[in-house]
Image (cartoon, rainbow, N blue to C red):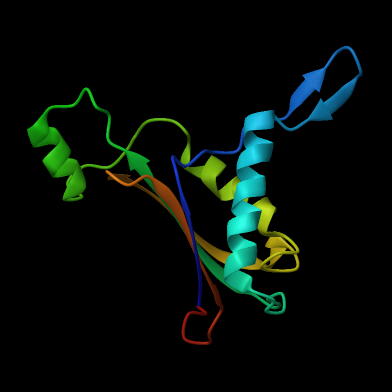
Length: 140
């Protein structure tokens, strides 16, 4: 199993933008920088290993900062997992950032056949990505 952890507030992939001046579509700068950092984190974990091939199972865990404005009792409940984030970014936008791992961890993200995406509260914001080959015991 490959485990990629990148510290910092998780960011969901932003919508593509359209430039009227040039007539082109582009990725927002914030998303591009985040995906670049994620690719670097993955490269250090891969450390020259060959790209994964075949069907893959991926788990994405977005650990989001607890808002400072919340009372202590609420924060304790959040850290205990009794409450989960229901704020933006949307869950699926975390999964879209997996494009950054193409040609770094796997050949293409189309190899992902099973995907789990979770949001959690934490006092140590980060994104965690677990990648494993699909085993016969997981197949339905």
